[in-house]
Image (cartoon, rainbow, N blue to C red; front, side):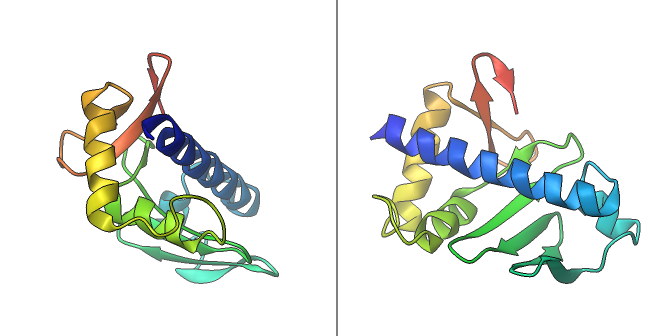
Length: 138
């Protein structure tokens, strides 16, 4: 199960990278949170006709036709997630084996992947993680 769940985390990270690219094309900023804080983009709006976004704190929620993604970005520009963000992403997908997973189950799988060395943990928070691929952190 952990490899399949890890694949979902990779999918989450790839989708966040795609969202960051959409924001970059719109604002010229690599970090969408910084673009918002610098006044280059409104707190809420549309990236395209069917992609809606809303910035909050250190994160951004983005709604597509077939899924929703909410992510946090720290000053190191790492894509950071916790159990709630991943559980919301998984449950928003119309398909897949994890759409009905609970928050507690999600958090247990994240901890196990951290113990296995597949995830890094933010020094500032014990429940926020980032993906590690082949010895490099993203």
